[in-house]
Image (cartoon, rainbow, N blue to C red; front, side, top):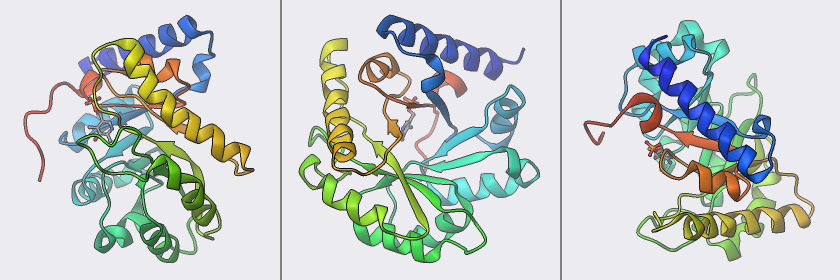
Length: 233
Ligand SMILES: *Cc1c(COP(=O)(O)O)cnc(C)c1O
């Protein structure tokens, strides 16, 4: 097996073990492979090892990769997971399958209006800022329900759930507590009658704590593709 294939398998083992520990079915946790900074060949290799869902942070880099891998398009799922500016929404609406980082209505409205008619709705998650930490992206927990209602009403979007990126915490329990804040917002929105099925929580360093808090999708880069040499523009 290739190195990326081996690393993918190890991440799947980590997910399975974390699920066993908390009594969850591993089938309830999807793996999103975060390929930012890595070239199309790395994605091709992961795809050959069975991976279909890939996450990109930077719109232009993602578009270049989607184009380079056009031959695999029907068996790949592309997720935009980075902050999205309003002048970049059109190519995202046209080429991606998911957006995890919706934090204001204006962006959602543009994505819905710009989603081509022949494509299925764009799947979206609201990004929630659970700790007010250095990473200031995301709607506050208090504003999340109102935004969820408005986004759920947009015709060419399908609201799937929430995403959060809490600051690193010193230990497992405090990391899980931060993730549980996102889980509480998720539960409150569902209790209000809005259907959600995706809680996008957890990365290479903290996916076990995220699974302990109810994550249904972990976004893993480093543990699959290796360390990122550069911070992309
Ligand atoms: C880079 C990134 C990841 C993956 O992080 P790793 O620590 O490399 O697993 C996940 N989610 C988002 C939003 C990211 O920007």
